[in-house]
Length: 334
Length: 294
Image 1 (cartoon, rainbow over the protein chains, first blue to last red):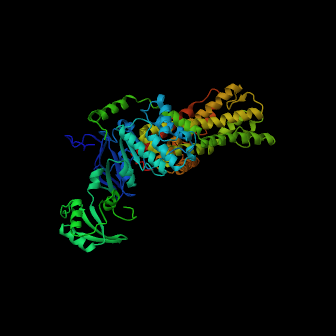
Image 2 (cartoon, rainbow over the protein chains, first blue to last red):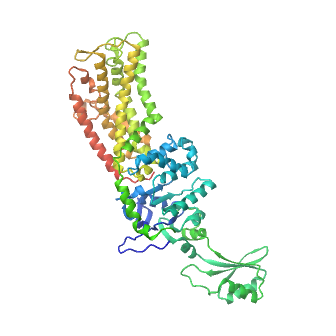
Image 3 (cartoon, rainbow over the protein chains, first blue to last red):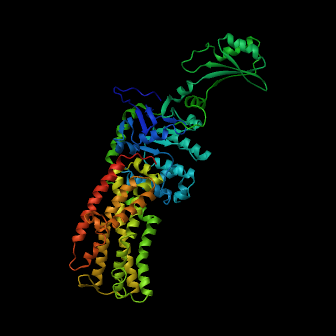
């Protein structure tokens, strides 16, 4: 995946989703504030953010369900919501959980939603519905009323609905919500196989492990603003890396590290020795403390008579990065 | 990532063109809407409740002694001589409350019901244009407006024929018509009532775009129909009466004359068309700009 090339105009070529200054105001409250999203074609794009950070509101605006207070949206290179008749047939969506007619069967629900799509060919409807049900492993329950479905089965049916027609873009809002571990795994595989066919997948989630596993790109929202966006390796790299040393000789180790220009710090000791950490690669913007390679650090430690029982370089996980960007705690951002 | 240069350059335009060429007349949504509406247990319950009205009337008349002439609803005293009058009586009796009630349930549910289930967002991203969805929803509500009085009339004719003798019907003009012609008049009255309920359905459609709580829209629609009928009773508001959508609801007596007097049907149709235009426009104005957040 290469970064999208900037086109001659303000519109960027090769972006499946592009928003500029997208804003949504509910009365006094700014739910989404000046969002500039850029989702490259063919990417699996993780859209992260704590509850209440504006993810679903953004998705509603992308799909033309809600009008933007300001800013613009382009999907597949076309203006939304103006060109929805041309755009939406190529977009499969799961928005804020599945929703179906409880008194209809799974098959009947999909027939109904497919009938609502004017572009969908009635002649192939039956085949497409059963194929979609098969793809999410619901064929055995297709004739049951949705009323009797579990949350996970409804979620699968919702994904099946998104797959009724061949799509250029899939927008999946919390796709693994309510799924068991097998289901989560299947969704991951499904997303990978769709991406392999060239479909762009836009996944909103607060499950970071999931995003780390399947996404090529990610964006992080916090309180209605976009706080980070880019290819996943880049996002991860922008985090801090530290060395972590386990040794019985903490004091000499500290002085060796200080001699290398690092700023060592004592961490809570472990059963097999004291623990010393030091920042190896700082957060972007901060000055780098020396530029010693990890293997050189170990060599110097050993030279200095420090008994090394354990040594490693630890990078921030996406979760650390996420918390650093969006803040700690359970408070829902307002 | 597997996105090659060629698919990057051609991807969007190719599929966009394909989507534009395959756009049917959009009747499958209407068919689907009718299937969902008339396949629902709730709709069947409403229609069964309506069918119960003539049955109750017929059974009550059958097991009681002869009704003295001039007592009870119009036509009631004629039932024992001619079972077809069960249909006329039942349709007359169901006009003020039962028909508006059932139509209120269906019309109030149109948009609010979908919003409440959350299916509205999936219909819209399918995509269904909002105007198209409104039209389909209204068309289905109209189909119910026809089905409801038809159910009352047909159930009335059936139970009347089962419990009482069927013979020539004496019309309000004094002419006598044979049972097959009388049956056609029952169908004609059902059509008259369907037209009568078109305005109320448009009101219900509009109210339904205002909320995500279908029961609220249903109740409000029924209240509007009651208010309209109450206002129609107040002599102080006589100037307003011809503009009330319920004004001609009971005017189908003219269809029981020979020759048929079409005046009230024509007036009624124009009045209902006015209500459909006004409340249809309001529903459009509201729904097209509405944020679907449910």
